[in-house]
View 1 (spheres, rainbow, N blue to C red):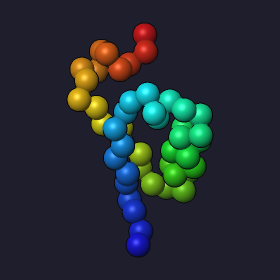
View 2: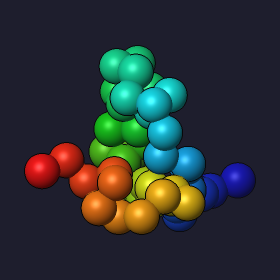
View 3: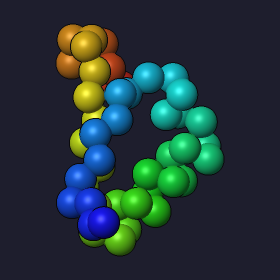
Length: 47
């Protein structure tokens, strides 16, 4: 099975180094990584 994209909930769990490394690896093979959140954008973007 071939995946074109993966959607993941953006939370503190994603900020763990091994999880970030995995998402980078997934993206490097051509799979789009889409971050989703129920929070307002201004609460998740670092200023």
